[in-house]
Amino acid sequence: MNRRFLLVRRPNGMPVSEDFLLVEAPMPALPPGGLIVRNHYASLDPAQRGWMDDVPSYMPPIALGDAVRAATLGIVHASDNPAFAPGDWVRGSHALEDYTAVPAGGFTRPIDIDAVERPTLFLSALGGNAMTAYFGLLDVARPRAGQTLLVTGAAGGVGSIVGQIGRIMGCRTIGIAGGPEKCRRLVDQFGFDAAIDYKGKTSSVLASEIGAQAPGGVDILFENVGGDVMDAVLLNLAERARIVLCGLISEYNATGRVGIRNLWQILVRRATLHGMIVADYIPRFAEAADDISRWLAEGRLHVEEDVQDGLENAYPTFMRLFSGANRGKQILKIV
Image (cartoon, rainbow, N blue to C red):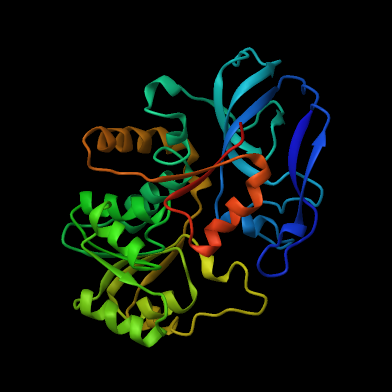
């Protein structure tokens, strides 16, 4: 049998458990030229919340009654493709289910788990979050030594890596996160120069604290949060600042319209705003993996993984992303 975590209702605001259903279904059939993958680990990401809405996006919405789409690591269970043999470890865009049928020509790729300390690194240090951080900062923002980089959602799987790469590039790095414990980890574990706790603060108070840490202005904003946090940073942009818009997690579960009040500062500061989708960089992932692997080996890059156990815990694990309970990259161990 194949356990599957289905989307059965479009969430209205914050997802509730009734929006999903864990079912047992028959084993999927092996598609011609394709694979059946036994999923072992799944990446849980804020972007999945957007895929649950029936709205235009860079990926089609998850159909009602389908398993929730997710990047996974797994082992080939059966193959009709000579490039894959049963027992091979692979990663790809699969789903929250025990077994996924992968058609010919999919994005599933082999991985060498003997080359890493643990398989989950392919979802954290070498996963989509790390690729987002690497290309969003280095290819889009193009940091220069001595510039000030501010990262919102800095304690998450993307933000924590952005800040560390910024430090490697010689930037002064400031992270915004929720709560004193996360802010402490930004400085002590991830090497940020400064951390600001946004919780319980108005946008104006937060803007003042950012200004104190970046008196010359923020040269690069790596934006993961949106809302009041982004509004506060916009009041502290340097001339010709670059904004990498990676996510808006504070707005994903909003039931009404959400807007940025201080967008006019982009005009005032002659800043640029660039939307970042990591799928645009898939052909260059090996380039990033080489650099990231070297930084890991040199001890210059630290990753934190939050691994929760059991497909039956898919809903509470997903919700950790929105409560702030997760510590680093959120991963679900399926088996």
